[in-house]
Image (cartoon, rainbow, N blue to C red):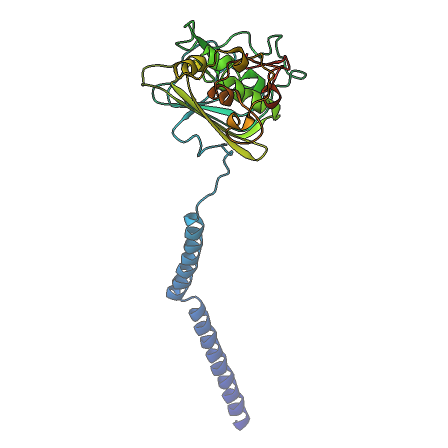
Length: 312
């Protein structure tokens, strides 16, 4: 009997221990599956994901866009394309146009009145008549744009950047210019200097008008760099011979014009002391053009076409 009681006591002890274990397991399970704690954990995870997503969304998306050249330079202007040989004399207001032949980049700007007011080029590249379709006249095109004013008998269809310097012939490179100035005066001399130097850099032309109605400039200012030297050349759109005559600067004696071979004082002609005499300097000193090869001034002057005449 006592033995049976021991077995019964042992059995109850086992059952009691098993029950406690079950309660502990249930408690553990309940703790692991507590809805509030699970919800809190899930919310924390959701918040972490949300914060991660917010961080990504807040970062600006950088899109690669094609580079637009000279975007600051062209600010306020509309970039348009015009055929280099377009004969129309019309110019749109507030536009910028590439007036360089081929791959050259020569930029011309108009103001709100359609007047050509500025032309710039990082580099002036001379015409290449061996590899470019240059006409027998030395031009790229057979004619120039008909800008209002060029119908005058005393005005040329003047290029701001000449064909020989790589410029085209549309209205954004053409301005009515005095014939003498364009062919034999400061404009022609400036072009000869750049050609002789093989080109130029940092080129800028500023064109000024007497009013907002006309397309005929009143004056020009050219700035460019040759072999490291900055050149600034300003002149009015007038016949230089008539101006010199009105100022009494045009000599009438043969010795002052083209036939004298008597040496003179170069220092009174060469005003900047560089050893070279320009057409402008010669005229200012009272000499008439052209200067021929037998004149004492000739060795100090630049004869671009080697024909024995300077300023013809």
